[in-house]
Length: 117
Image (cartoon, rainbow, N blue to C red; front, side, top):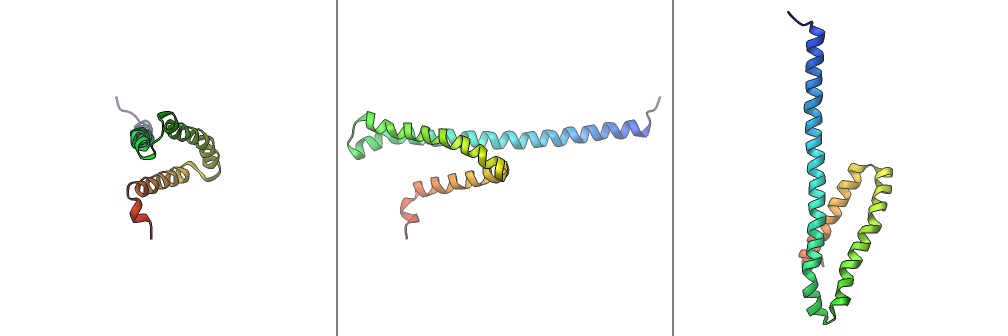
């Protein structure tokens, strides 16, 4: 019992689509995980910096906790704006620009003296 060439070709095409779909899903999942990790890392950095801010500015804990609150509020404002930008410019461009700005901001925070001329 043999199958016709059309049936065999259709089977191969379905396998090719499945492989491409799997690769795309892996890429999308990887980018999503990387973005989530960067957000969690940044929030952790802000929270770790709170005791240093407390000592440096010689202020109360309730005042310094506003740093964390302000950061969370800034994120809440940026999320809807990001959606609007993604609709207008495309998700890929917005994602790349966001990651680029984030990386530049983090590097300038880590090496503040090197950014001044």
